[in-house]
Image (cartoon, rainbow, N blue to C red; front, side, top):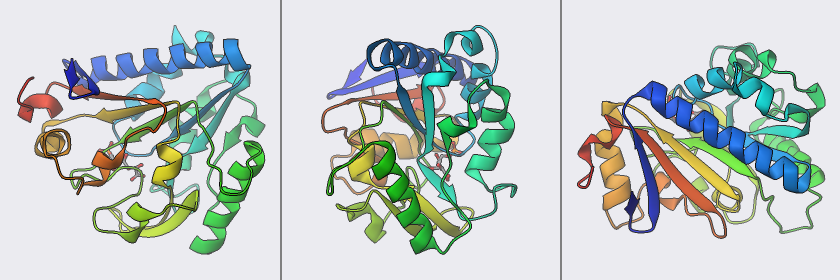
Length: 248
Ligand code: 6PG
């Protein structure tokens, strides 16, 4: 089903949503490794992708994904120690990364033991080195997994913040969201430079926001600015999240 030019995939429940996301992840990984011998993916925190991450730690997925050629980056992070319950990396490590056969050197968490400015610069430098970027260029990740908050935020790009308009930096620090803490986030030029973006949305409490994001014409909400410049975007949602949409 397409809405304007946006591919929207609606699954009956959160389990089927996770299943579909795990299949898309696995297919992307196999395809990229076949072609480039490398699969680069940036993942988000939040609750929605957790079920997908869990499926990837089990058969049939765990044996199919070429983990040794997969590199993980983070879309955003809360500036708390990795063992803190708010940590996106910590939670991914506990439920996902720590349960798959991946070399440690393929895992690139955002640094948290620095000031917000230094930490964002360090992650930007890591991306620049890994992707061998010239000055002013943005990395082209194979896959970016995003979620959306009830306020329409995505990554740690919150409504009304200056960060939404960042055009030069790859990673910036912001304060906001729930929990209201210092965070690092990839910027829109990085997100929108991806080959493929998967935006996962689950639950009735997101239905109104999703309707506004997909059906209102103004670009006021951060999630409306997810528009890959030369890649693809898939909105993957469950029936409850889609319940406000006029054609679903
Ligand atoms: C974060 C997330 C954030 C998340 C949305 C949706 O670290 O806060 O990356 O952008 O994806 O808030 O979160 P839920 O999936 O929990 O609704």
